[in-house]
Length: 602
Ligand code: ADP
Image (cartoon, rainbow, N blue to C red):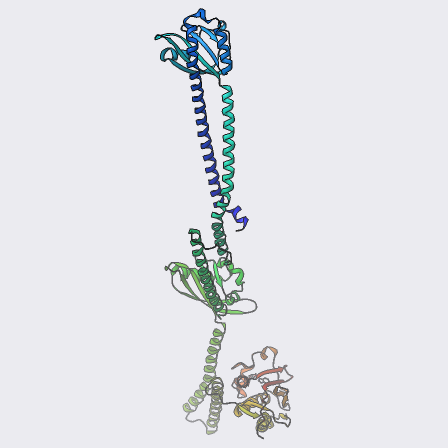
């Protein structure tokens, strides 16, 4: 048992203080009783001794009192006897006149007839008293006895002792008793110390152990498990500590699991208590709300985040006891985020409200995709409607005018055919896109020699280029370059790029198709000397239906889907696309494809 524990142990000091008080009270009581008894005994012995003396003195004094002339040397005898007994002796006549005194001259002494002890002796034969002597001036104890002769009272004898010396003896005795009591108290205290220590040490140790457990430490030593109550307490305490440790460990493990789940969640989670203080905020929530999770815990939720919809929906859920839902947009200079909020009230074990939790779901990408889909449907509808309206107009014109000349009618029919061609191209491109994007209908990838595929496509476009008076050259190299793709897809990639390059390059311009092989990838480059693109268009050029000049594209038979198809095909082959261009200086479109290690069959 460590000493500091004893010093701090209130129980020890209470017990020891109790011992101390008990010992002191007992010593005082015993001292007081002994002192009283000694005083009583001394007083009784004194009285007895004085009484005995007066019995003897009576016999001695009777003749002198009865026959005063015979008492010539009587006074001297009394003085001698008084000196040898160490007691003052007095003989008094029946009328109170002092006849003889062992210490004073009787002639100078006043009448003693009214002294207390004489009055008592007159009435009852003997009497005592204690007072300061009028003759000697010291505190004196007296005992008087009547002298009778033939039944007649003839005088009194009196013995007296100075009691100051006896008082001094009694005081000395009292000191001895007090010293003895103090010694007994000291011995008692010395004996009580180890007893109190032995009794309180295990309890103090248990108190220290309980303190340590409260601070989460279970390694504090416990008292030995004896058979007494303290031993039983120590045993129960040890069992309780072990169980508590196990439960705390289980709870901590469960809590860590929950925290791990919460922190790895894609959704943000914020939980508050009834006072709207944040009790948990995971990393995702902190990122979405642009705050710090660690510093938010313990603070009011409206202090933790500036997004006021969060405290509002938490309060709604808590007060209504129902789930609440909302969607908010968080805009800042860098980005715009759409967040869906689901708040639920939190209930305690007995169903009482203990707070609320809100789950934040970042739906920015979802909303963007919804927007893309909406735009796509609107674009498709618009693209379909334009040629259909034109076709309907042409047909109605022909039908309404029965006298229309044959050549005019043919021109209308040719326009109808052109518009139908546009519709067909559009539907074909849409189908191609749908096929690329659908998992099931996607063609299987196989090793294909890019050199051969590109060469065939370039050759296919030779008549069109010639017609537009655009020179097309190919720099493909000889060794086969194998990529994982499908034949039709590769043809479409190179075909769409080449088609655009020829379309957007004026007559006398040139187009070059190159294959640039690197260690792991190959670039299909289609460079033209055409009209080029503004920097602002470069970012959006691969979006569906994005066209720099809509009318021009339509006139040239474009659908606005060609580059989107190129991009999606490249992605399907685990590749990517890029473009370099400047207005009036031509464009270079690149498709980056990973090279296969497999060598294709020649
Ligand atoms: P389109 O069918 O209209 O050609 P694309 O998706 O193939 O659609 O191309 C989208 C737009 O990109 C075109 O409308 C055109 O404005 C621009 N574009 C494509 N290729 C070139 C190029 N080689 N030079 C200049 N502009 C181009």
